[in-house]
Amino acid sequence: MDSPYRLELEVAIHAAQTAANISRMALSAAQTDAPSAAAFDLIKDDLSPVTVADFAIQAVLTRTLRNAFPEDGFVGEESADELRKNPKLLDRVVAIVRQCAGDSLFRDADDLCDVIDSCTTTKLSGPSPSRIWVFDPIDGTKTFMRGEQYAINIALLLEGKQMLSVVACPLLSVAATAPVLDSSIDPTGEGCIVFGVRGYGAYVRPLSGEWDEVQPRRLERHAEKVTSPEQLRNVTCWALLDSGVDVVHKGVAEQLAVPFPGCDLLGWVPRWVVMALGLANMTVWVYKTRDRYAKIWDHAGAMLLFEEVGGMITDVHGRQIDLTSGRKLQANFGFVAAPKHLHQLVLKAVHDTLKANGREELLA
Image (cartoon, rainbow, N blue to C red; front, side, top):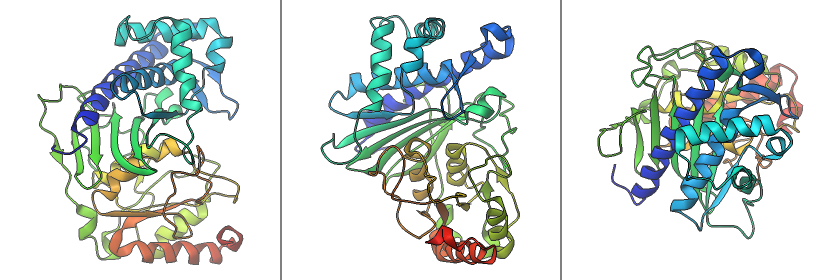
């Protein structure tokens, strides 16, 4: 792929491969060790599980990309607070980083914690670096813990716009077919990387292999060719999250006569990936209350992949997604993504379904 971001892609893909190795090692340890030694032993304040892999991957991604691009800013999901309080957990993170990334990446455990924490201080608006990398070390942590679909998300923003996306999906096949579910595991064990640059298309390649050794496959701009509602194919997270209005998500599909649920995935990043791959081309998400907001690391970059195949993404009000509003996307409410030619049709179906279900307050 020739683009002005060739170096960034090469570094980010290599970092994603190391991150995938960390995730696989942590998962293997969790599945084989006794519970007292499992990789999953911590609960965050928001009740989502945190793993050794989350901390280790954020540290490795940040240090690797900062070494290559020292003037850039970095935003990640995790802070090192719990690591500093839990020496046993910190020791596990340090050990897996050394095993997968070598001994020279970090001076010591304090250095590793400082690098993780550096991702919590970068501002996304106002005085800030013009280039900001955004990471989700493990998107789909709950499914990751079950040995099901998850993703590692790397995005580069330039003045608030998505410019580059690299997503590693260690359990998703390059040759995946619809419907993709959390339990759809690559039988070869290879996994894939889906990546793209704004204006230069989106691509898929096997997860392993050096940059110059693997010929990626350019993804067709399939969403541009979708002009009829009969061609819509859904991806959602059905009845697994308390944050969404399930009856509306199903109602929109029924109004448009779209098979439901279609692809069914817990993590947002895998949902954007299957839309880029052409295994789905539509998703709707309406939060139950107006004070719920998406988190930037679940969407930045990964959304670009769908846009690069002809998709259009707005919030429930039809507004463009604003990635400068902070770690939470407080300028937007929910998501409506569909092929460009049918986006307004899908958006209208969302509004009609909300009104039919007495949820007009969510449109206020």
